[in-house]
Length: 314
Ligand code: NAD
Ligand code: UDP
Image (cartoon, rainbow, N blue to C red):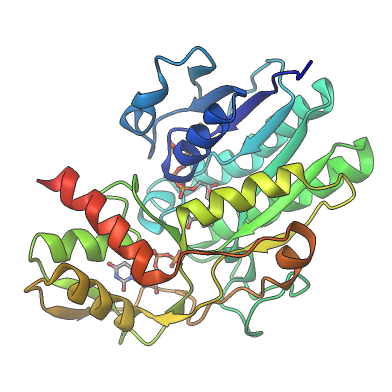
């Protein structure tokens, strides 16, 4: 008989976590969503609350928790610069103590555990595009360090628990991901520009807009996370997941104005300190090991995201 898996998703009420909950509940797993609602919201998972194979726990991952599960997706951590810089000490605690608590749980109950790491571990990269073997160029003492170094330390913890305690780990480095269920005040570039365009406010490009990012639609990302969890046990990662098409921030602003047919003007604000100037994943490893690559190109993904924001803002 097929045994129903018990799956814990920390940060499950956030943007990525709520899409992952949707998918894993639909697959018939027993899903436990854990969140402290710092940046996540109950609205993101309201459609799941009535399901018999879904449970919600309000809990802060800085504190340990004892439950029985088969798999853990560790996503709890604010991801937008304005939110992770709001209380930087707490951001480090969430990344580091959260990882220790989840790895301790995985060790005790022998669960498989996946860490949502980030392209930020590469910092302002001197190697382009970024491959997994690149060690990164990260400021240890800047305003972004609480997030970047917190995530780097959690990767270290994952590999130490793996070597020392044989914990079954998977580490994915997620590049900029966007889509429906981003919070309108999330502060990241795609949601900011779409909300600004739909409400005919100025579009706030930071710097001259020549810095680049590579944007992955959420459905592609969630598929990649699940494939990594299902991959053979000897593939720990780290593995890059992201869309290798690269765009400047100015191009992104122009695309969003075109799609929304907005009257908004582009204005140029100062570039935040340590803002990476370029970012694009090399996804060769994910293609080879997971047979994964993104299928949704930026125009299509932006249209779906605009539709979502149009609905929630009206
Ligand atoms: P998000 O801010 O929407 O989700 C994070 C969730 O974690 C929220 O629901 C928040 O309330 C919860 N959380 C924060 N601190 C917590 C704590 N101490 N205890 C319990 N819950 C806590 O962000 P997201 O985009 O969904 O990101 C999810 C994960 O993926 C994060 O770990 C992030 O670092 C990683 N990631 C995301 C991206 C991206 O582009 N979306 C890129 C790289 C990495
Ligand atoms: N950005 C911008 N305007 C905004 C928000 C962000 O020009 O209103 C820029 C930001 O400076 C960065 C890029 O868009 O160069 C991506 O920023 P985001 O906060 O989405 O993610 P990250 O910097 O972590 O990749």
